Amino acid sequence: MATLTQEADCPPPKKQKFEEKPETCKNGIHESLVDLSSFQLEKVLHNNTNRKTVCLKGKFVSKQGEALVLLEKTAFAEENLKQDSDYFTKSSALEKVFHNDIYGNYNYFPKVNLNTIKATIIHPATEQHFLKYSPQKCRVVDETPEVYEKIVLPHLSSEQFNLKWLYNILEHKSEVERIIFEDPDVENGFILLPDLKWNGEVDTLYLLGIVHKRDIKSLRDLTAQHLPLLKNIQKKGIESIKSKYGLDGSQLRIYLHYQPSFYHLHVHFTYIQHEAPGILAERAHLLSNVISNIELLPNYYQKVTLPFVVRENDALFKKLQENVN
Ligand code: M7G
Image (cartoon, protein in one colour):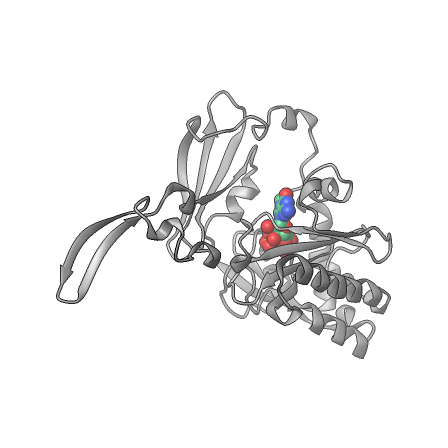
């Protein structure tokens, strides 16, 4: 039985399956968009003052379908803070608000290139995308193997996110120039590349390792037969990051999400100093723990109770509640 234990930070909702429609791509905006002048705001979905992000729902003039625009003020990059950088020249302006004795309060307007806002644009966006980026109440559910088999797995099989973007990466149709490392082996190979969430500054490093094998949905499917794959990702992922970004394995947080949003096995690599979204205890499982657990017990992830977070308005939550009562 699933037990509902506490509220927590929310993961994305489980999504409705939707058919791939080629016309969706023809109506896409990403080939031609150069500014946001054609964006018509309908609703502010979320204004996260801690993360300095705002999530907007709207439309692009003369484009069909709704759009989701996520704007995020980016973190300071240490390498831009050198003495001779534009932060400390006349090309950045300071405006005094007030001062009192030794305390001064200013507005600072750095040169435009130091003031990047990262924009993630999803178009056409589905209702599930809007739900994913809206604040929601969440619950933690203890998923026993029985609950997984009887409730969660059937639910996932009928309602899950489209994996087209991910297969595009594996088939070298998209983001080819962004690939940092590839091991093409069909059993143990993977592609390492920057995550959509990352803006490229090492201080907030966020890479994704996507396995070539297509039959591993999530942590739940992992067994001793996958140990060579997991160890390969760990070893070669760390080596590639060391040679490209100069970070050691001990400076990386390497983990899997349970539940993930996308049911094709992938591993998150983030810089340990960066508090990336999705690193909380109820969702992140360190890769080294995963390997060690399977070494202790080959079918550990088929036997263990795995807690996960679900949104209160997710159909899955209703099904789980019905099972508890
Ligand atoms: P997850 O654990 O399934 O879900 O991770 P999450 O999004 O709730 O964390 C999937 C990861 O894939 C996330 O870190 C996304 O930011 C990343 N991602 C999603 N998309 C659609 C893309 C994409 O098109 N390209 C890249 N490079 N990463 C993506």
